[in-house]
Length: 410
Image 1 (tube, one colour):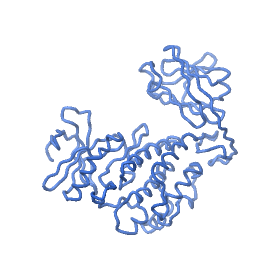
Image 2 (cartoon, rainbow, N blue to C red):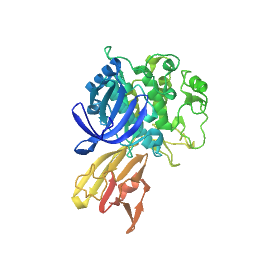
Image 3 (cartoon, rainbow, N blue to C red):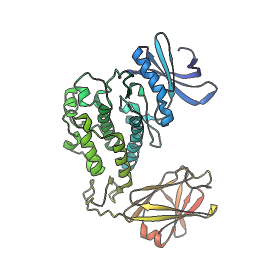
């Protein structure tokens, strides 16, 4: 493996980074397909054992990358006298702890995307086996991928159990206090810990877990540690998650492995949270519903209406007229990705519009500027609030890069 070019399972590869990483799950090298430098891959090397061979063969047969572009599982393998090599897609991004700061709505989207990957594993009888921040990759756009599935739990009696339990900060109590291998149920505990880190930007036992013994105690009570947390200034209060997500967190930290929520339940709850994300006038966002009476951040009284109208988008340059539902909490993204005929100066996702009660929140997300017309003058738009009734009465004119659009509610 010291050569610059290698052939594994008939695939010819050019090594680009011989020391990509090393850890409990083997050595990793970065490579590209020989003759196709645009296809980046990871080669991992393990000591050969009958158990490792059987498990890797089962994972190759699963073809996880074929089920989701955000699951980096092995697609080919080769067994030598002393080592096993397998090849998996390389996923660009940074691990969760090195990701850029995100807004609360963005964190909700990340959590939902994370759960989509986990649900894909569960639907195929697998659990990751090593859910941890270092194995959760985030792209600049906020998409979430799972890597290092070599420790996966496979629901097949013919495939040996994993030999690693996972990282201590993520372990379920039954794994933490014994020597048993990870299970799908213990993975559901680690999933809740990871969701805590994505949504609240902290580990659930941050305030108690300085020595290892304190971590073990905080994570083995059967209760969600956040329930006893004193929220510090600037931290997201758990009430911002809404009652449904908080209830799932309570279940997920149960000492009874069978009581923990399945991945699809989390996924549906995350989607519901995204559809009910409210941005309060104090600037903070939270998951609300018609029963919400106050902002979890500032305490001000709120009234959330269950409204549904439509947004009319007129683009004279391409003679386009588009209409889309305008619902509370949902985000509409305008750009080349969903409005056919726009020029290349307009980004794929150039402008975001979300309804929050009787107001619309506009946020520029494109590479080139967004401008707003006011009394014959153009002003740069980064973020902007507007009353829905105002644009229903007087349409708003915007300029996405060099293309004018008109927005009207009705």
